[in-house]
Amino acid sequence: QVQVVQSGTEVKKPGASVKVSCKVSQYRSLTDYFIHWVRQAPGQGLEWMGWINPHTGVTNYAQKFQGCVTMTRDTSTSTAYMEVSRLTSDDTAVYYCATHPRGGWYFDYWGQGTLVIVSS
Amino acid sequence: QSALTQPPSASGSPGQSVTISCTGTSRDVGGYNYVSWYRQHPGKAPKLMIYDVIKRPSGVPDRFSGSKSGNTASLTVSGLQTEDEADYYCKSYAGSNNWVFGGGTRLTVV
Image 1 (tube, rainbow over the protein chains, first blue to last red):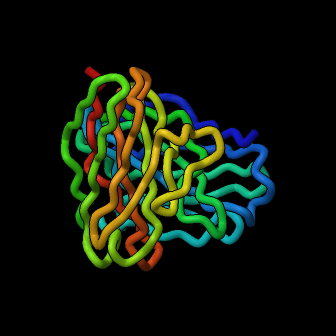
Image 2 (cartoon, rainbow over the protein chains, first blue to last red):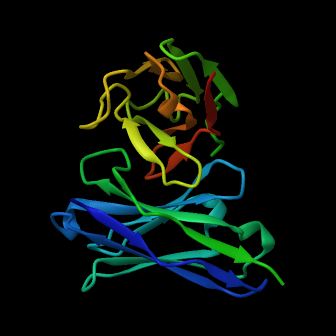
């Protein structure tokens, strides 16, 4: 059974950066999926942020997040990372990672979510 | 790109059917048969319920069905159960390796 496990809650001050991890286990191969990141502000809906190909490192960001979000991966540990820089209170949210199977157009497995709180 | 449009709320009684709409444009919903639906209970991660407009993942009851006409996709939940009370989100491929979610619909089983 595929497992997607994210890092824990983070509390950061405005202007700082945060890096969230997402470890995928039991997927057949790094070449079989992509990883997407989704943000959910308190009481709000889901917002697609971008994706990374964990095999090649190729990324694509939603226009809104270009320049302030960086997605990376470590192939040796099947872990993806999403870093948000220059945090503001508007970045307070739960951040989810989700897998997208190659050849598919949906998100099949989701992490449990990581709460990021930005507060002075 | 702009979020897809969903009604903020929907409701039905146990055993009834309810349909949730998801309206986009020809650049997303209308342009691809890659609409998926997710259910999210409070404090939980979303769960895939429908993909490629009409397909159900293994383990999802056949009470859940999807359809699409033009730029509008729909999710129908038949035989409503209390466990169906949750937020539902549609999502569509929007071209150029971009995706877009709907604003979400809170389904209440009254």
